[in-house]
Amino acid sequence: MTALDTSPRRDAAGVLIVGGGLVGASLAIALDAAGVAATLVESAAPRPDAQPSYDERNLALARATVNGLAAIGVWPHAAAAATPIRHIHVSRAGEFGSVRLEAAEMGVDALGWTLPARELGGALLRRLDACTRLARLAPATLEALEPHPGGWRAQVRGAGGVRTLDTPLLVGADGTESFVRERLGIAAERHDYAQTLFVCTVQPERGHAHRAYERFADGGPVALLPLAEGRCGLVLTVPADAADAVAALDDEGFLALAQQRFGWRLGRLRRPGRRHAYPIRRVAAARLASPRAVLVGNAAQTVHPIGAQGFNLGLRDALTLAELVAGAADPGAEALLAGYAARRAPDREGTMAMSHGLVQLACLELPALAPLRSLALLAVDHLPPLRRALARRGMGFRGEPPRAVLERLP
Ligand SMILES: Cc1cc2nc3c(=O)[nH]c(=O)nc-3n(C[C@H](O)[C@H](O)[C@H](O)COP(=O)(O)OP(=O)(O)OC[C@H]3O[C@@H](n4cnc5c(N)ncnc54)[C@H](O)[C@@H]3O)c2cc1C
Image 1 (cartoon, rainbow, N blue to C red):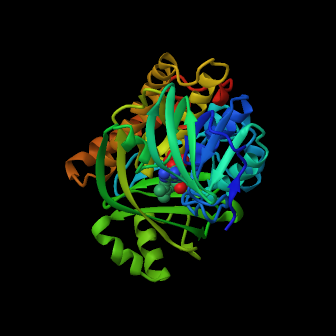
Image 2: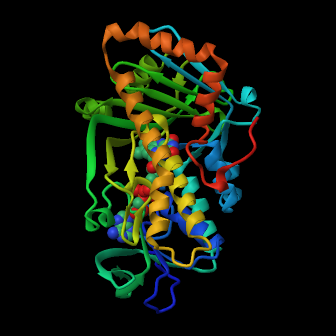
Image 3: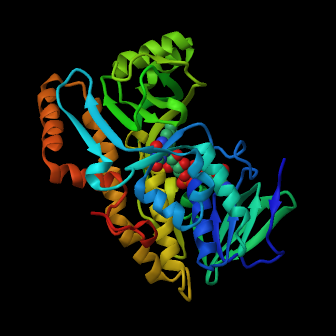
């Protein structure tokens, strides 16, 4: 197993980031780029095939996200594996009305990009290797926390035994079941969607023309994201009580189900890749900050993947925090952390409400809702200002975004 310990034998950790997933690694890089001393602690070995979320899921990255990844020097390591999304098509099976968002109408070359999480993970690891101020402990696990004058004292178990690290700012980037959140005594609101998501790649008969499809159907939504070489990333949601039966289907049976749910817009779906299944839940921390501690990414909020918002939102957490900490005399100052929580609130609450509302609206099998839903889709499609507002938010320009993601848009 590859083990990494680039930290000098010291007790002062600088900003201590627990969790080197997609968001924690991005934060570590952003802090290093800003000249802030930090330590990154990650339970998994520093390899794309060892990290739990550096896997086969295909991420739809909003335009703002790609701007942010470029600003911290990650995108050059990932761009070659990414596929631009130039059109988005949202519809519901069996109902009229659809929404089409176009990059050209927004005056941009792409609304977003599709990138396998494994490729983004590899790019983050390569960029982490070039960090100069960052100490990295991996595999190493945070096991205990206690308050310490001016911050927190952490016990971290790694290859060389247990280390004690003192930090003026503890960052919980340790995912949905965050140990940091629990130890800080921050409550979390949970909702089990009773749905399972199946993810795999497929080869449609017709070219995807850089179009991403989101199609709502009884039983859950299905999405197709454009990938390289004409392939698409399929995301199929099924009720949790049907998950075992769907997992047991052979390729032919699985494709028949996907085809029935997605329809024939891209012709026959063929050659499915390996299937991966994910249970879906929503977990929202009651607050983002505690004395000398904050939460980012899935530790702060885990949302339904239907809206493709989890990492996009988490990166905006990370880049906002890095922006506030850069140049601050005390990274854990109460006013700074209150400012972080206040600045993230509109984006966080808006994105969580949008993701949750979308699932509720899309999955309710109420025939009486159908005409309303169709009308809503039609209205958005026929009102350019509404469509542009939706496209802007979809591109990740929400609330008061971190400066790193901004660009001049028409
Ligand atoms: C099927 C699927 C599709 C998705 N599609 C999209 C999409 O299209 N677009 C999008 O933006 N998002 C998408 N998401 C969401 C996205 O994957 C997550 O939001 C993102 O991975 C969260 O990153 P994170 O770093 O916050 O958490 P994680 O990736 O969960 O990382 C947490 C890390 O913390 C480490 N850790 C935990 N406890 C400790 C400890 N005590 N000590 C040390 N380390 C610890 C873990 O090993 C892990 O590496 C999708 C999710 C799923 C499941």
